[in-house]
Length: 300
Image 1 (cartoon, helix red, strand yellow):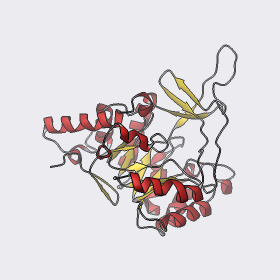
Image 2 (cartoon, one colour):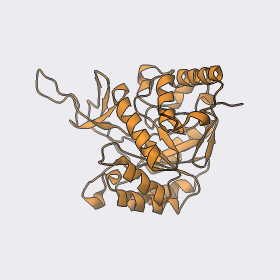
Image 3 (cartoon, helix red, strand yellow):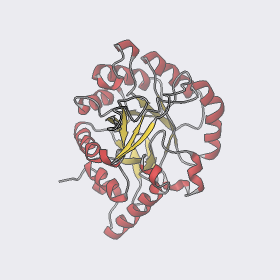
Image 4 (cartoon, helix red, strand yellow):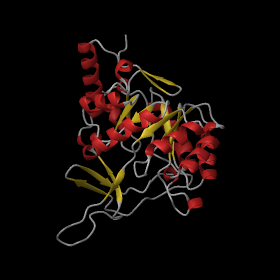
């Protein structure tokens, strides 16, 4: 009996532990077996290559990490020609490709190109980026846009379609419902919060783009609350992330309603964190005689 078997939309997973986009390279598999993970999420790609923001792009805060990477990536063509063949060769777990665009047409163009490729289990649609058709407002801030985007993409694929939600919105439940209505088969949340750090001595920003992304252990209570709120509003499963550093943290997200969890910033502190979380969950479930699916969403 696999007490930690999980379901995420169209996918049956042997492990409920994943890695957050942009935080994990396949070189980590030199440290632990791939079976620790239920799926692998690639770094977000865009239609054209991006060099990202100038340094400094990372700053460690008192409780977490600020980043202003700026979606640095080689672009769709280079990903398909160079990175995807390598991932297909290395990976023994399902591959989810994360991508983003500046317009609905860009999202569609990327998905259609990826649909021609083998070895992909699905997609993570990153809607946290600015929408040029809406004067730079993030896709994920507008339920109508999220619905329209998700509907277009859902019509084009039978693979897993995960919409990744931003916490920087007024009502994440409304956004989640729009994605579900549009045809998303699962959700990922949360993306980074807004954050900032200032050098008190000089008055200068600690990072090249003053308002940037905040992740890590400090955002866990927010991520937990938004996971719970979203799980109450939709029927599709949630891949939850945000401040998960231990197996106990992961359990809290399952009780809140997550079907699976992803580890991100914790990997920078401890490259073995995903393996330790999986081991801790396995031992806990065996000791209690429980299975994962028995506890999901049972917080009281």
